[in-house]
Image 1 (cartoon, rainbow, N blue to C red):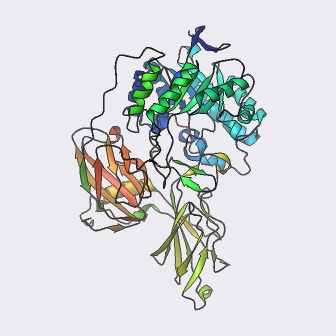
Image 2: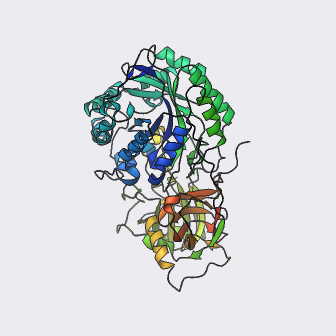
Image 3: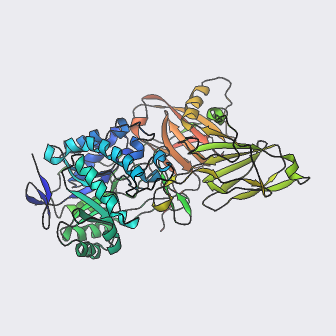
Length: 592
């Protein structure tokens, strides 16, 4: 069996100095049929290790329903890394951030009354222990000293930026060691002394996360930790995007220079990200530092391997640098061919609200998503408007405590306006009517700091002209059910043809197209408002005219030879009743 340990100045592989040159790939952001391709291209860039987070909420979205198959088959992912002759680093959190919804925590966990996240709180730690033991059942037999390829396991994630509960970190170590993890353990923090002090332990290797000023930041890490290898376990070579912003890019040559400085100093590195992938479905996170900013569907990250798995200029620039320190494989990945471009007419598929079902109760105030146990994106709230409240007035002010995160307000079936959490909007004037309907979208769960686990929906007691508006019903919406029903409904001869006329949402549209082979596609969402897209029932994710993202990536394994089906669920309006597929990614304007 091989051994891997920490020496005075280096990692030691079978007792000999070893440098980790790793890249991050999150298995839960990549179609499983494409894992092997992405891993192989990492090796061809000169990497010897793949790092991945483990997303608790992907494995256990509902308490007690653990899933480690398909997209969640961490064991298979690690085995594919081993098959490529590479090592693996596993970072199970339990908190991962990663711009992933709720920072990786399951909503059922963060909804436990009084739970104190990321502390030694017994209620929290009981659930964390159960989770980690599940993960380590997969990891332990795949450790390098068990004949596998896992060389490092991380404890928590950038904890020094959040708290200073040393007892909590020590309990995580005890659970990890108690489950049979024998390889070295690490922590990661930004290279600031207070972060390193609060987020690390004396007997666990401290590593750093940064993307610039490499020499200076390695010196800070060394000042904190006198012995052991230096490692930047998150070398930020790009950044993430949010709706309403621009597409973030970094100069490939600047990234290469910083990587060169790291390697010249003898440090180990994990490139974050090597391949970002996609926030398929509803998995995007959000930031909120005074302004709520939901993240886009793409997690391209301006990484060396783009969202579709193709080498970029950054790939070649970083490969050249790595080649100064290690022998590179002779093989080079082939350049991708442009995808086929074509248009697909879209047909109205009926009332989008097929799947909305009231919980059967009447509530004094609107219940939250969590109270209803709803893990989808939409809920329809309805309440009667008391005639006496208007007292002859034609309109009144409707005030909501807080909208999380976007609301479309209608009176008697006529849309009145929208309210945005990002814009801090909480009120609007509504006309006299019999009832008000408010469609609320959860746009992404905050993945960082104290807002992790916050409730979604309409928060607080709605007021009409200062008076409590009561008798609310709530109907959760099942988007996957809409996509399925739209597919069936489209086969009926009574379906209204789309033509070239616009369609006002909420509405479901569908279209058919044929393919001679399975292949990647790039769905152009320009001309659409805000909504969700599916291909053959595969949930591609969210789109929004707010940008910057303009295409949704359709992985080849989601397509079929022969007939294929696209369904979109539009919340605002569609001015172009067609699905256009383009030759490649269009991720939006950059800052330059």
